Length: 119
Image (cartoon, rainbow, N blue to C red; front, side, top):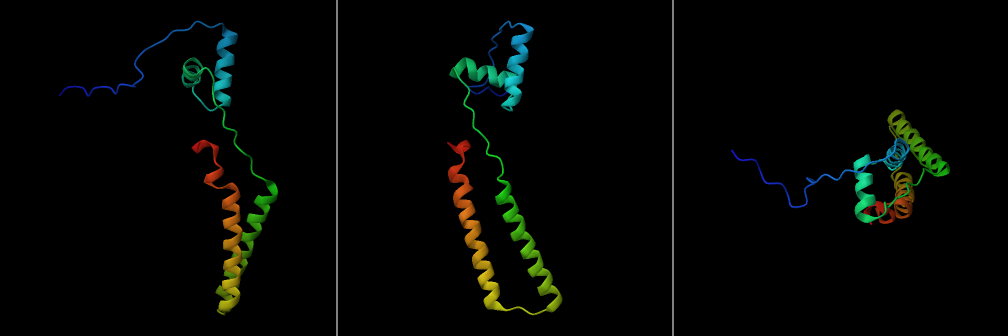
């Protein structure tokens, strides 16, 4: 059986560049910081002339604490319902509506629409 043909844009050409040990270390370090392989980093620099860096946002400790508190409250509600067997449908609906509102707002502020990686 014959080997399948490579795609037109397949990476099959080599390009050799000589670097000093310090230059190579610098390229490898920049690639590592950008979570790229040295080859991908060098290719981006050579072909595009630049490497686009997409900054990852860190987690806001205050928001993380708020979400943890919501989770804790949900666990307490579930534990209470499991032990008491009583459920007030009105209170449950209010709690679920509030949680839904909070999560919707969090998604609006930090969801895929604000994700630079998709741009």
